[in-house]
Length: 262
Image 1 (cartoon, rainbow, N blue to C red):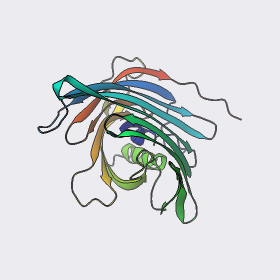
Image 2: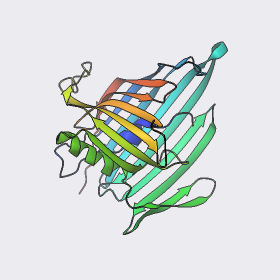
Image 3: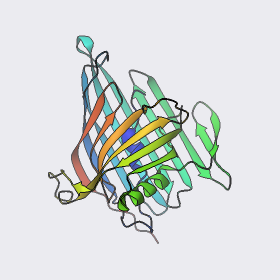
Image 4: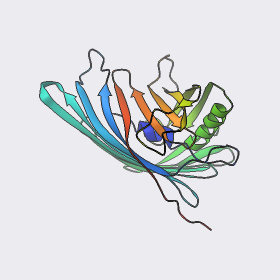
């Protein structure tokens, strides 16, 4: 697909652990997307779209979903569409992670797969189901997104500014592992004044840089800038792909009722 499920790859990672002070809120949010800051030489002339994000606490873990549509403006008044639906589940222990992706892009065609990985004593192992079943195996020094964001939140709460770690993501079947560097700013007042629930929140401004696992260059594959509160809500975010940026503005926000569990 032309762009990655940037939001989910980051925010899927957030949930409540007993040794952090923040309990992540089950919620759904819609963001308006705008392509901006297009560099010279790019074939894009603009674009817009929308993404829907939902994170819900279940009885055994977190169910997360992101759907997006982007309409790219091309030369000679042409357009190109990109649609994506991505969902994941991760258990509370951070040992099991499943994922499913369905893409339909006029740039790169259709792409659909699902998979599952689990940590054992020495490895992270699982499978990918696409045209056939492919075994997956990774070193155990990788973190799942949930573990990774737990550590980022802990470091933000303790005032630390930088954290780098290799992380497994299921939203790219060509490259599941990224080296992720999180730069954490000083907590500040949110600018989301249009939503009463968010208006008095404090947020951490963050920049999250994603590098190919074996990258030798200094520039990341892409970066996400966002304002994140301690309930796991992104009040605003931008994705920088180098040739262009995508700005996401919160359009709607709603708390989600959680399941009743024994």
